Image (cartoon, rainbow, N blue to C red; front, side, top):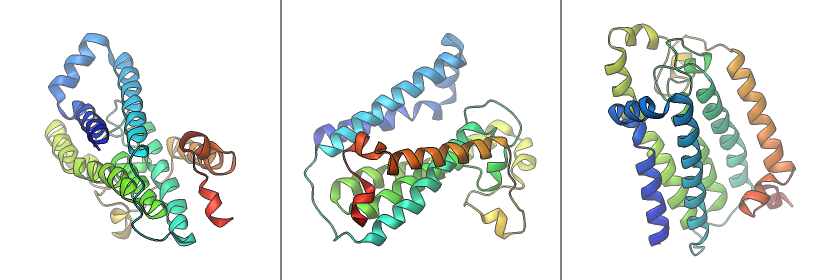
Length: 226
């Protein structure tokens, strides 16, 4: 349990760096924005791999009997979460986490102004039901709670940074996914969303039907229906 807790602590610490604007700005000013994002992405991936490897080394402690509908939950939530993460990263979004630095608003923000954080949480929650064990609950539950817990801080930081512009930029968005839609504001589509949908679909096909998930994690999600 100590290696898992250590890996999770490093993961949380690493992802707290962007939450401190002074630290983030100082790093970017020294090495440049492209180098920062490449280095940060590589470090994040390494931390995530370490976290998953330590989680898989924990003893398997079942919490409930698995049924086919548990996997169905994952098949719905995981692709949706992946799409939101990819679309959020590729779209312009000064209101939340995004790769692009722009004052424009991408279409995905019409779904939620925090698509990356919500997408990560939805993806993580989707994996709890289909695994049904303690280590998965700790891993995916912890990741989901971290993502959702970051929303309030991200919202506060965006309001402070954007000042008077925040109201105009956020008026057709909502924190809760699709809340703006149900209030009569219809989200649209743009090229980043279409590209993200294609990437997410290709990723799902590779993971589920081309052995990608078994290659990466040693488990075939389709096998539960066999």
